[in-house]
Length: 298
Image 1 (tube, rainbow, N blue to C red):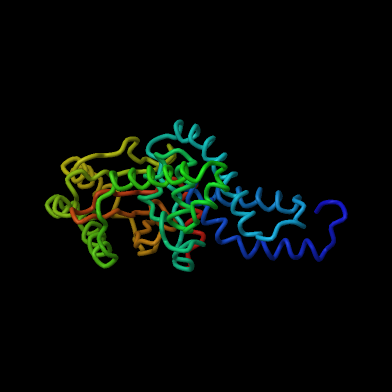
Image 2 (tube, rainbow, N blue to C red):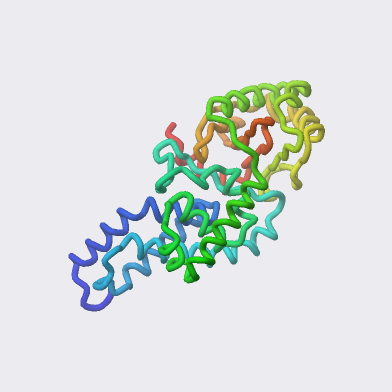
């Protein structure tokens, strides 16, 4: 609260921030792929908002979105260095989307784990441009102001991001088929059934296990149908007998929470195209798994 500010002004600032908060979280989470980091960004945005002279600000949401986006871009630039030293594959931190399917956005774009994983390969400014356009439907003129660049450059940033995703990701299947294939996959993985696994996996399937060096997860992605099916079949007798599974939702898609005793050990989710399951994502790092589990209704 800066000098001379009255309680009424701070109350209004608080109301404006709380109203914008879902959208601000949605932007920061998509740019960073981490709900923990997104919460840190929102804390910083709130501090800056409190210390801003707000008398001339007529559109609080636009102002707050600009602060949040810029902070998230800066954070993402330093996060890239940390991700390079991350042990094993890095996967985004999952979020429960049952209460808010869009996570604060106009539409549920750029929220699936597979999309966030692919966006990670873009630079943070391209990623922010894509998120604000595809999920929040910002016009290019406003995007250019937020990103402090030209409208023409903003169009290029979004176009590059779209091309990158189109090249990396085939056409998706609908929700019912997605769920059906995950059910078949789970049963086959539990039984170590090679024939069924080979039937549901796409030829170029990749299995990512994010243990962050803490859990005994594979330190490198397993690539290709023969390797992935053999890996899962070998893994089955060690992993599944003690495990209990529960169907949950993560990032707008059905997922499976795996527990041993009372401890969550993995969140399993898949990305599915017409050719079968093409990405298998095992989030096993407790730093990502426990915050997600804490948000689930019991």
